[in-house]
Image (cartoon, rainbow over all chains, first blue to last red; front, top):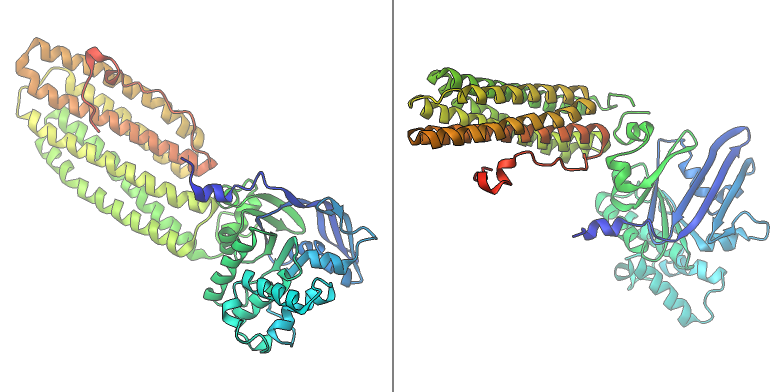
Length: 265
Length: 241
C-alpha cells in the first residue's frame, strides 16, 4: 500500500507552468546567474535554497521581471510562462506581474485600509465591474489567505495596524487578488514568529492547490516542510534540482550535501 | 564534501553516538568469542561471565537510542547525517540481538556442559561462531571506513554460515537417531547453531545499513535463503526467531 503522504509529494506528472532555459543574468560586469534551466511545476511548491549571494532571489525576480527596474541588470535566455516568452517585447510587465504575484520578506502593506490593500490590484487591472464584484474578489482573496475571519469586521482599518503575521497574510491576499498563475515568495516568513510562520506555511500548502508557488528561503527546514521540489543554487549556478525528499535524504551533488548538512561547500 | 560541520557541537554529537556504537560492537564481538570458547572448552566460569556481560550491551543500546533520538530532535539532520542517525539506530538494534544470541548460547553451554558431550559438534559450532565473529569485525570496520564494497562482500560471506548450519543440522539429526540419549544435548546444540546462524543474518543486516549509509541506496535484491532446513520438508526444523 502506498502511503498517502508520499503520494501527496509526487508531482512528477504535474504540468510545467514556468519553463526557464539557459537563463543568464548580469549586473553590469558581474555574472550573477549562470546558465540556469529549471521547470517550475503547476500546483506544487518549489523551493530555492542556497547561501546568501548565490543568486536564488535574483533568479526569482527574473520570473516576474522585477529585475527590469534595475538599469544595469541584463537577462538573457528564455523564460516561458505557459509556453509564452515573458521577456517578449509585446509583454507588458504590469500585466505579467498580475499573473506572477510576489510576496516579499518584510510584510509591506500599503498605508491604506485592509480592503483597499486587497482591492488595489483588481482595480488597476479592471477585474471588477461593480462594487459587489470587487467585494467578492476581496473577500475571496482574504479567505484564500486564511485571514478573513480575523479582519472581516474591520476591513476599513489600516493594513499597517495588523500584527506581522497578519500583515504578511494580507500581502498574500493582495497577491492572490489578481488571480495569478504563479506566486513568488521571497523569504516570506523570515520576519515572523513560529506561530505566524506555521500559519503562512499551512497557507502555502493550500495555495499550491491552485497556483505554482515558488519560495526562496534560508530555512532549509522550511524548504523541507513546504516544498515538493527543491533547487539548490550556489555561486550563481543551479547545482541540483529534484524532489525535496530526495534532496534532503540523498542529494546527488556533494555541494548540495555540504550545504544542507551545514558543512559549507 | 567537507567533513566538518560549521557548528562543531553537531560533529561532537555524531562522534559521540558512533563511539558508543563501536564500543558496543566490540563488546558483542567479545560475547560471541567467549560464548563459543566457553562451549568448546566446557568453561562454566566463562559462560557465566558472558551471560552477565550482556547487560552492558543492553545498556549501550539504550544509550545509543537516546542519543540518536536527541540528535534527530535537536539537530534535524539531513542527507548523510540523517542516514547516519537512522543507520545507527538499526545497527544498534542488530548488535543488541546478536548479544542476546550470544547470551543464550552461553546459557545453553552451561546446560550441555553438565551432560555427556557429543563428539565434534561443539567444535563445529565454535567454527561457525568464529566465522560470524570475523564477519562482525569486518562489518564494523566497513562501517568506520564507509566501505560499501567490503559490506557487500560480507553479505556474500553469510552464505558460508548458512551452509555450515545446514551441514550441522544434518549431523545433529544423525547423532540423535543413533543414540536417543543424546537428544537433549543435541537439541541444545541445535539451538546454539541456529543462534549463530541468526547472528550471521544480523551481521548481514548491519552490512546492508553500511551500504545505505554510504550510497543512500538499500541493497535491492534479497539474497536467497540458504537455510535449506526450513524448506526441505523431510528435514524441517522449527523456526527459531
